[in-house]
Image (cartoon, rainbow, N blue to C red):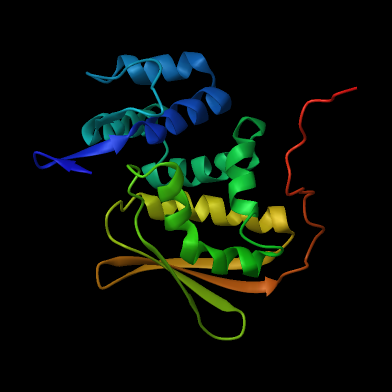
Length: 205
């Protein structure tokens, strides 16, 4: 959302960066990141919104401390959102998309609508999935969050592993949009991770 010419970032973005840093590198490193940013706070509220410069400051400081490019950190964060036990809700939301990796990719055409039902203020870049040659599928991302491309790359690699698929992935810019091109080498390369449609509830016995 835009307010007075300034991008307002949904708190779930900062919260994800906070949890990724703490779970991956420890709370001490997150404290170093926060202390180096002028307006940062130790704990973010997922349902609030924050100025975009706060998010960039957090990411840039994490990049500086780890001596890693922002793109690499965001790709790692995308993987974290799928594989870490504290983020099982994200994995479940994504696995609802299909019974195999190809179905999952095609379901991303409806991903923005699904997210809008849950968090209408998140304003993710519009995702458009296009089938190409026999084993190629392209994902076009509207040019609103340039960093979102690298987060998606991490998510896609992790989801391919989750489904047991072997893929090749490339990305490039095209008329202002980002395009992620996936080649599905083998959709049954390995055994898929277990997944049940219904989450296990508390025992009544």
